[in-house]
Image 1: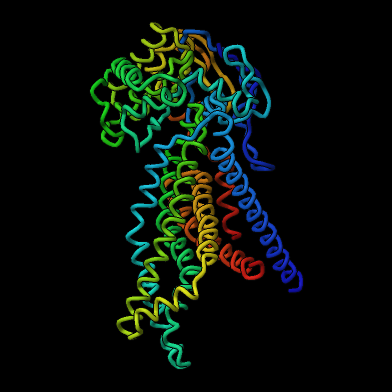
Image 2 (image 1 turned 90 degrees about the vertical axis):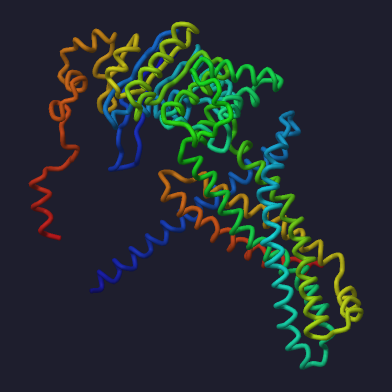
Length: 268
Length: 272
């Protein structure tokens, strides 16, 4: 369904050039849930932004549903975008619109359905995420977990083949995380939707994933089923799973030597 | 000493080059956004993608109807002030009854369109940048793009059309209010005979004055919308940037409005 080949991306110029993704290869099977895990700054969100077409890769190919998409522009890119839905980390609901209008927006813009059909469709989508009855609320009146559920309802409004989830469980309470996990699994199992989840919530990733890819500094350090990841003997993977503050992934993010920097300060 | 002097000049030179590059980058960005907006607003409907009018109505109410009070107030007071100021000078020449002509022409040709545009740059331009900037910051603009909806068509086009229609309308109303302000002061405080006042005014004012004023107000509308939208769309980061860019949008659009006013006034001066 989705194939990423030799994806490279760097930001900045000259000395400040930072390689964010270095030869990223991955394959996401149809109807399966693939999680991309990794610490902050590991490049996992950059992968997602490439998949949705917000970034253009420096080199490499991205195949979605049998089409090379990385260089598409304009109408061609829009054609691909209609095949997938996204649930953003913040939800990114339109604050000026009600829940109903938010979910109905893609249908109103991209289909010829009449208004009463759209309203029935909206009810169906809201029922799927368990929030039927919230139609007339504004996003500001919703809790964090509800916003994510509505965002999911909007993402699946056009019955996409693929849904991308950007940190679906960040900032939620355990029960809401459980709800979102259940929704992701249901969509994938019952409707055959291919899911790509970018997350750093290990228990949730272990629960829902068919395949987990772990990123560290723009490189894949482990890839496989949750079981394989759990039993991995890579110390970086173990550190990430156990959440140890120091280890092969160092505690300090500083790039220069502490002593040298202090010594050099006296010359200022 | 000499070296540090040249070093200083060199640094200033580089700073100058840097800031001029930035300047031209902004100008070209503004140009491309304007082009995209014109394309989405006027060309795409001809290619079978009609504009939706409901958001345009909403925006027309927001930018037009709700601005009437402040525009009325400002232009009425400008008319009053202008009558007082000109009366003092004209009475020294014994031409007090020409206050009406002066007020009328000044308002129609210059102050009506300009004051309306400046008020709207502050009221509407700031609102555009703040609103769309917040949407940009909270990923709503990205969400639109990933839903295969063009943010330019979805966000800028309704605002563009609304202001393009409403600013000339508001300008006409401002003209009337300004003239009314001058008339009230002229006929009461200054004691000019109403009939003489009206006659002198009508003699001096011609249709051309109204038309040049309206042409200007259309240009001002484009400036206000495009600067406001551009400043919103380039926002990266957080709330702080929204505030900064809103301020920049208001300042830049006010300056551009006055520059455009100068250009068009001199154009009309030489051509008509």
